[in-house]
Image 1 (cartoon, rainbow, N blue to C red):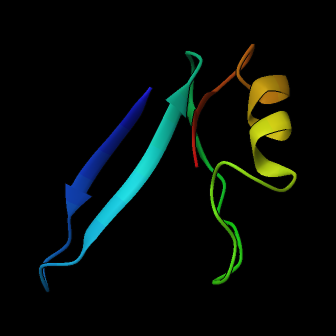
Image 2 (image 1 turned 60 degrees about the vertical axis):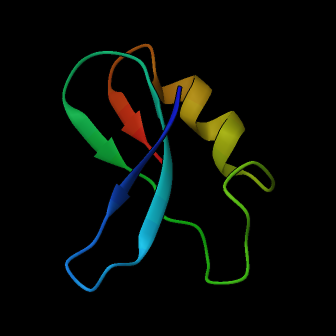
Length: 54
């Protein structure tokens, strides 16, 4: 599930949420897109035990 929040300085931040359980935050590098690279696959793997935000 993709969502957004707005930071205190007004920047919109997009994130994906998967799974249930204790919260776990995955952060990609500055030039990465959250839909590419290793994080989507890692989030899917961890979602069986955690609520994963990336």
